[in-house]
Length: 65
Image (cartoon, rainbow, N blue to C red):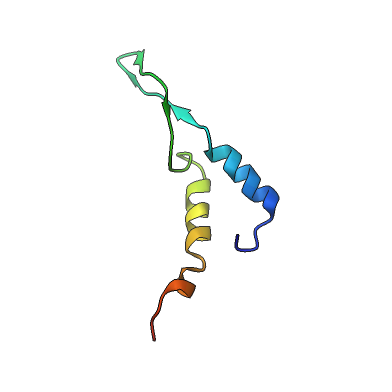
C-alpha cells in the first residue's frame, strides 16, 4: 500500500474496523449502530486517508495532459 509501513496499516485498520456509534435526542440515547465507513470526526485521520488514497490516482487515468 503505497510504501506505507504495515504497522501503520494495522493501526489504522484497528481504529476504523468494528466501531459503533449512538446519538442522543432529548437525553435519550439511541441503540448502538455499527459504523461501516468514514473516519473519526475531528481527527486528522480523515484528510490523511484521503491524501493517501489519491496520491497515485494519476497512474490510473488515461490522459495525454
